[in-house]
Image (cartoon, rainbow, N blue to C red):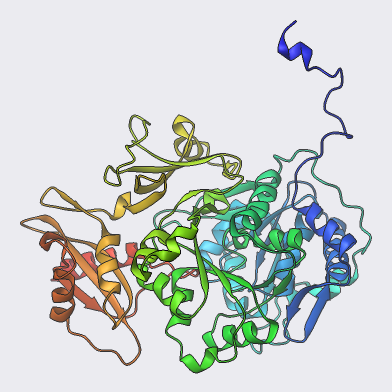
Length: 547
């Protein structure tokens, strides 16, 4: 008798012992167990978990009444308002796929996504009326049903749709009999990458991955029950790193914020005793450099997640100085947002603040429910030595990796070749098994045959007290092939010369890594605060062409 026969129960997988994993179950549980707890706060608007559940069921019902079926796409172009949160449940409750659109894209990109994703319905805010109107006019074929979310706190814009959101919900059934997906591999959402060349790729998430990453957020961040979470991170970005679903699992409270502003952030933290929030380095930088008076009265612990290829050590140190507990996570759109965490050790508390910042600035180890993150040679797929020196490509494997790219099998196969998801980020494996990113493969500067990490040069620039933001790209050079060129945005009221910054870097870097040129001015950024290096490269090439 084989072991397989020995452990056969004579019963196949059935309803009694298997349920498809879906984050929709988190909302049903929160409404059942904690119906009166506050789920969503937005200004004077407040919804309990019971009312949030009913509103999401109304949305699902209304979508179904308007012909939305399993596998159809429902797009949303919204800020962090209650309707955006409700869409994360109501849309998949109807069996549809949620496509959250980046509010800072141009009309051409929005039109491409609506067309490529075949959106049947579009929920939009009056603030984006000019953008939406232009995008809709670019569409060929059938246009989506447009539903206006009329936020009373916003003055301006106009209503474009056939019906307003609250009226749309009023026509829905609060007891709508939604069902879990028949297959947990079914798509739950569609997120487009912010491609720098060509059309963006549509990243498809499934119910299983969304469920697991929402849970991993709680485990890997040690979130206590009923956290109060402030929406500084756009929900359109990787579905808010899966935190809309996390907060339902946690039965916490969502504090919605239409627009990030330092004064508003500190006020909401103070008034609502916000315990958790997420953001890109630029958001944390904003808070660090805000007037100290804005933080007055905040005496409770505040936990924050920061994500990015490598947040500057100066940001990590700055957050510690203002008393916020910062945890570094890492991931991509293709990994549902964060899929690794720089798990902290008690012993690090004995280190200096600079040493702690260095430890906490790493990309770390796999999220609890992600199988693996590693650094491999991209050609041989062999692990690099754990020496902190040998570079390879960061790769992920596990349930918290996308289903694939929509209508793009070639790109999907390339991303998954060798049985790993290839990130394009270059990193080393440190002796303790933590991943440390050195650069994006396209951002490495090769000067005289030597590789220069743009991130290392940026770290040196951030050490100067006048520097708010910094980005380093390759400047073509007749002698060396490429040399580092720094683009710097200064803090308000600060001043420093190009030569002074170069001298500052010389004290911290090998001579060949020091920027040969410094350009001052506001840096181009994505909607999530990432600096657009491709735009800086284009600026350099344009200047050279003119010159």
